[in-house]
Amino acid sequence: MIRLRMRAVRKTSLAALFLLMLALPQTPLFAQTSSIVKWEELTASDFVVAIQRAQLTCILPIGILEKHGPHLPLGTDLLNIRHVSLAAAQQEFAIVFPEYYFGQIFEARHEPGTVAYSAKIQLELLQETTDEMARNGCKKIVIANGHGGNEDLLPYFAQTQLATPHDYVVYVFPLPEHLDQPGRPSVKNPADMHAGETETSHMMISRPDLVHMDRAKDESGADQHRLNLPDTLYTGIWWYARFPNHYAGEGAAATKELGEFDMKEWISELVTALRAVKYDTVSLPLQNEFYEKAKHPLGTK
Ligand SMILES: [Zn+2]
Image (cartoon, rainbow, N blue to C red; front, side, top):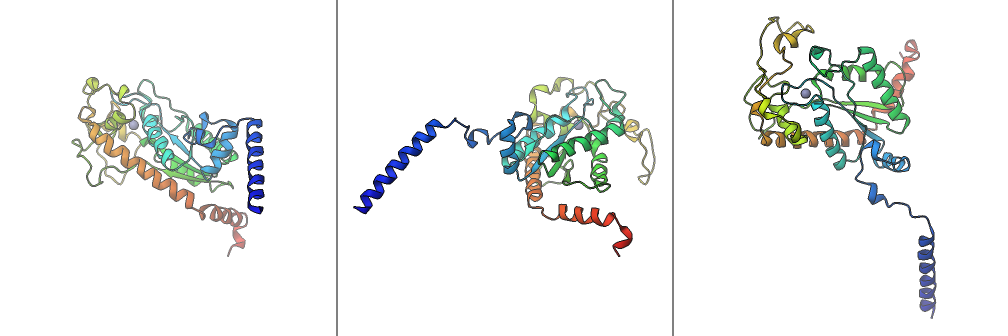
């Protein structure tokens, strides 16, 4: 009897719940939005859910607009790093910031299509962007770099975060060192630094429709050795001295096989980095401790 009555009660309450569900406005199920990692594709309310799911972790892929030999598009670096970032964020959920081209590229100002913002704007825009990302909940920001000319800018930017207090952490994910990975298809030209075999192979994966292989030999990507200084010295004109066409390497030697190998590796390195960032509970408290001590340096000893 008791059992029967219990079952009756359960049936009634289930029916009531069903009716209530029908009466409620239909909210989209979370499963329908879970594959969206692009900031600009989320609705405002889905963003709130996504930022929690991402454990406050966001990716800012950064590229540049610059010539890429005679055969690759101006946006090559951003196209590649976004391909990597979007794939990595699908595996280890993170929100990916929209297209960001505003890095360092003075060394290609002599080539068509290059957009070279001043050093001041590069730093200010990056700071305001990360500030705005953090204001929206991205307390762990991974700047994923796709462009060689940003490799000095980004660690410097990360270092400048210590100048004034921030309630978030900036992590830099630099360009990967592809060369010494076991099993990697060999690269023919040692001066494979820009729009050459490696980068062209990457584009064959991220945007094959934009690779014009028939034009890859229209210019030389050979090292012209026009400046001979010892390795102990750096000067800004070194790149132009060696590669005046803003092309270093041999795009024509690119293969899909190399592209597939590198992209897979690149994505998995970013996935590993994202996991480490999510587990990192140390950086922010240490930053706060540092900011506090920096207010009164004489009192810390
Ligand atoms: Zn590039």
